[in-house]
Image (tube, rainbow, N blue to C red; front, side, top):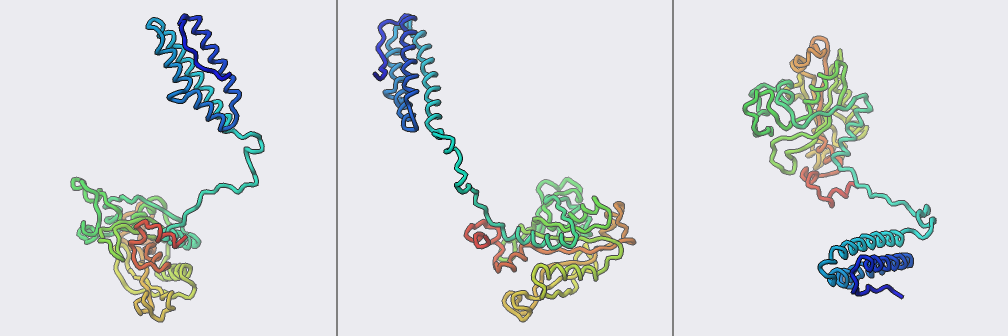
Length: 364
């Protein structure tokens, strides 16, 4: 016979103990009889349903019907019954959801569950390719902070105090720095060149490093400008390094990146931290130098800047072994975003930073 909650007329401790014992006996029998998930659900509903479950009936037929003097004892026993029922229900549910046999616990013939992998962002792909080329040539990789001081970003790189790059129209400065000395004021780095200074402070010559990372400038966003972009800069310092070494290095790197048929050419330019300085063009790898829309019918694409490290820069790290009379070096820098745009035919730099999945899925 299924258990029904009896109405109590005797609320003595002995009568309450007998009623609770009968309740627990019925609970154990029904718990043992509940099989599978359906049985566990039916068992839970029978004992714990809000309106007509057995626990709800205990509150109505025992606790509410008890005289005032007996409510304390009745309430204690109802709470005991509630705790026992909840424990049994959890046990039945666990038993009902468990595999019925050891063979069901693991089917080794089923395919594994793999988390789908995303695609590498085109800018990160370009960064990795550029860095990989120079690592193969023996360069190490160094990184530095994106929030820099004026000293590392400008002063130690031979930017004079009145240089236009220090203006807030070109550089993003951290607010509230006016009370600090100029060299200690914080800003978002405008190039990864500060990493070169930090590297020379850490290691004596010779050094050969590439410095990839994000940089920031106060540019209005448009198809070719962004206030955030990515650079890869390089530095090589040793005794006897010449401009010929620079040309050979970059020519080899461009061929490794864009194909063995590309040519390079250098023409004079100016950068505060290199002297002499040059801009580097590569023959258009879309039209083979014949002239097209990408190269603006010139047959050449401007890609990076470079030059021999200015002796004034070495003066800032002289105490670390960089005597400009004994050593020389070259530096170069290129935009990874521009390389990615050229490589994948992207005509708007903003597409790289808008996070549009429809655009990024093209590079999966």
